[in-house]
Amino acid sequence: MTAKKKTTNFSKAFKELEEITEWFDSEENLDLDKGLKQFERGLELASELKKKLGEVENKVEEIKKKFEN
Amino acid sequence: MEPTVLSVAQYLQYINDTLKQIPSSEMVVEGEVSDFRVAQKKWVSFDLKDEEAGAVLKCFMTVWQLKVELEDGMRVQVKGFPKIYERFGTFKMNVQEVSPVGEGALRRAYELLKKKLETEGLFDIARKRALRRFPERIGLITSRDAAAYGDFLRILNNRWGGVSVQHAHVHVQGRQAVDEIVGAFGYFNSLEDSPLPKGGQRGVACKPDVLVLTRGGGGLEDLHAFNDEQVARAVFGSSIPVVVAVGHERDESLADYVADVRASTPSNAVERVVPSRNDVLYEIETMARHMQDQIDNTISEKGRLIEHATNLVSFVLERQKERFRVIYDQLMVTTGDWLPLIRSDLEGLGKILRQVDPKRVLARGYSLVTVGGAVVTKASELEVGQDINVQFATGSADAQVKRVDGKGQQRLV
Image 1 (spheres, chains in turn green, yellow):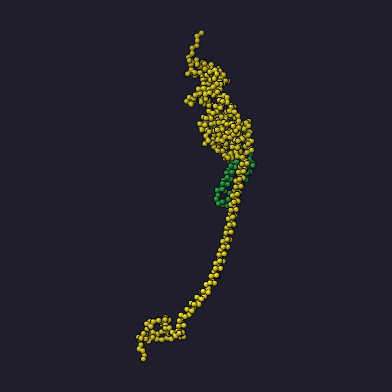
Image 2: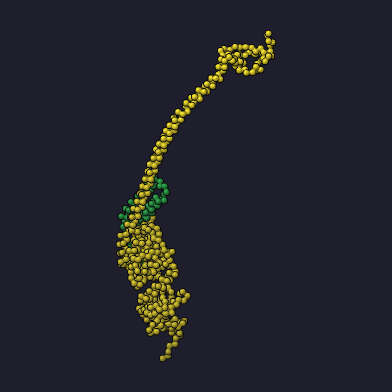
């Protein structure tokens, strides 16, 4: 159950990190205040994601059912 | 003894009853298909022949019973029961099951079915769906005894984590395989769509993000379930994207063609379904580094800007100071030039002023006549008897006008 929750966040967090990185590239004149805030958030996401990459394992569950057409 | 008289129908019924004594369920008839026809898209008829002996068995069945594609010249085994059709008086095998025999016939049946499904659009590239980059749930359809099962899970653990695998154990060959595989597709597709809300019932499965149908390689006969029309249609009909991985690189199956993603082996299926930890780690680090670079650039750019502005201000100040000094110097130089001029001009003017001073005129013996303070310049302005004031260089005298231009009081002689 926890693994499931983690991956939901993983997908979301990864997307947010991608968006922040894109934001940095799309800004012509980077506003330093906003940039630092975004950067801080980005680093937070990156370390969260890295942590998750290290700790998660897969869960296998056999379906208790006889399959018939 | 009198012979028994029977009607035709009774007689045929008698024969049919006798034919039922034949243990049909325990035998198959093998021969070559000829004159294969389908009438009204329902009724299938063909002749089963022995090439050498020239023997012919007429066969009849419905399209729903026919699970493989047939064509003339194909070697098949037929299972069914013999029957005389009363209305036409013809003897036919009522066929329950047909299966191609030998690699050649299997290959041919495979090609025919492939062509049919392709024509129907089951292999269309346009309908293939993309897989989620980070799936949460994988539905794995394979036999727990197959090497593919172990391979898949081992590579999955090496490559990625945090995924929940729901395994549907099915036979991947043999008689039950098709029904079980189709059943597994039905099961996964019948699950609830979204993950349970918080506090929802635990252990209740929900629809996976992707289905993986896999097995090891093998010959056409081993792969029959993966080349089965029902399985192909189950893959086609799945609302969940499907990855099919059969055997080794060279093996192909009809399920492969229908699948959204075709993987060459069970391990390749893992690679298609989940990203690699290392790749994602590298990507995360690259993104973080990129952000860092952008921030560093911005900071040093702003720093340069401030430095530049400071330099500019002191430069402007210095220049202003310089300009002021130049102007001041110029002023000093030019004043030296024109001050003496002004001085001599003033002296000249003073001289002129002194010459026109009325007092100096009076000193030369002229007098100034005024009436009530105003200087009189014309005698005609005066009246006889008017008081006037006469101003001399020294002192003044008051007087009275006696005559003006010879007119007035008589002159005393």
